Image (cartoon, rainbow, N blue to C red; front, side, top):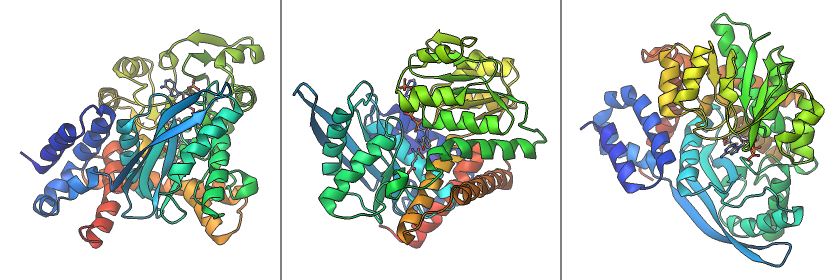
Length: 444
Ligand code: NDP
Ligand code: 2IT
């Protein structure tokens, strides 16, 4: 059996009941097969892939907190410090009831290659909890965040591990966590990113993932002779990534016509009203059912359905495995040109293959959504030098990073004979830098 197949078998048997982690590992290992085959004896001797697929450290802890009625709740907290070969662990904290160790491991594993692709010195990690911030009062969210950080603070630091936002963790949660870290450790340092501008955050970090997604998409389409201007865009999600993807798409002259949350989705044929979306989601923390009050001509539908809408570009920006084979068939039947992932692994393996086989330009999340973590690394730089860059400076750096990233994955795919396969390109380009660093540092 080939080394890759052996390791895939091992990962599946040693990490039972973690289907998302298996999915992420299989995708990466399958796409680096051509590189591994060339170095099989050495990689096998060095157990390189076993080291790559086993987190350096995983931390699991109890998070007790008290609700507004005096009831105590106990959630589970996680931090998986996956790989520090190229820099301090870096990656978000997800707060969602679906969180378990397998989800955090899949996200941490993806983060290794994504962070490598940014070209910046950041290793891979991820964390979070099965706590659901939805429907909780600010005080309850604060109680949870303080309890969560009381334990997490023992394992993180500006030069060790720097968490940030992800699903359910936005500016409010980062603020409460930062306050607790500072109180317990006595350090005002860049230990978290996505901080408020008044206490060490970076301008443009809020916008960065969505904007970066559009910078990369625009560059890719341009290289295929397609102008993004005038194109119809379908977007899923209505959170941080989706909102700023929609905003930048509009600024580029495209027409984003959908968004969604976990209860339903909106179709606004004239283009999504971003100001209304921000007010509903960022200010009032309401459901998308409210959107119709701002835009009477729009449609609201319960359940899933964004991918049934005809579009040129599809941007899944909600969560993992939200775009399946049926969705992919519908997108292709409707003539979609490109699918670029704003979320982490939103497209199932089967759907990805179907899109690629049908000539759709497909860019995986670890490349397409890397603008968020890249800008987090720029926030770390600003914190270290105790300076704040202008919005324009950060935004320009972000744009440069995304354009370079696209050409890097495009060239890696071409170099190994997989022209246009950005999954292979991203995984190989991300892997090569990490492996180089791991080899240089010996067996540690
Ligand atoms: P938010 O919490 O801001 O928004 C998430 C959105 O997706 C919400 O509209 C939410 O709906 C919807 N959603 C989440 N989980 C589910 C689910 N299980 N089923 C259906 N809908 C769901 O998160 P972000 O926008 O930050 O993150 C979105 C995706 O992008 C995630 O995959 C994340 O890992 C990825 N990402 C985020 C980055 C960042 O900088 N924030 C960077 C790179 C990737 P509802 O509110 O109803 O739950
Ligand atoms: O998935 C991701 O890249 C993020 N949630 C952002 C991580 C970060 O450290 O900014």
